[in-house]
Length: 178
Image (cartoon, rainbow, N blue to C red; front, side, top):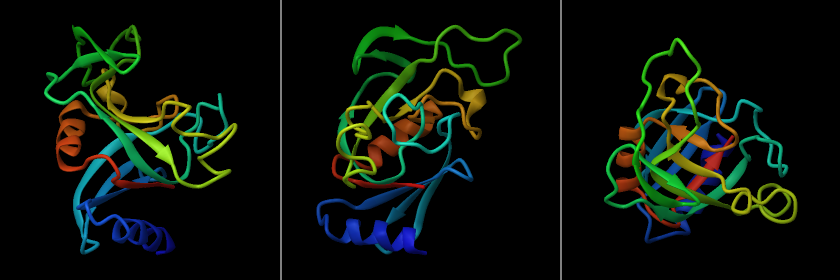
């Protein structure tokens, strides 16, 4: 309950934002809450295979309160591949079921919502800074892994889901990871 109170406090202090996001690492789910505190949408996700950890180079998904600082990829087609947060003009194949061979590449696709930590020493500052670690919500070519920890720290989503979430939220939307 404390988690939702923390998220709600941040939402109430941001009057230009309509939603808040909670990433439930244990359940591998992302919840989108409206201003009334009700679940508006729920999405399966994939967080880090290395678990929850904010330390630089840990490969972990950082805990705590964040905001979406940058929204990248508006109007790009589903499956557009990004490198360095720029679309490269390549639509990547999306793998929906377990492949017989390990796929080549772990791609950032469709949309990027870049996170900025708000808690000094937890996800903000030297050695733990989510923004400097390039922690995003993004689409993935490895959709068959959604629902289990498999990322290198980011929050992966199905491509249709990240586009939908991207269209609902925006910069300054609070995000609580735990």
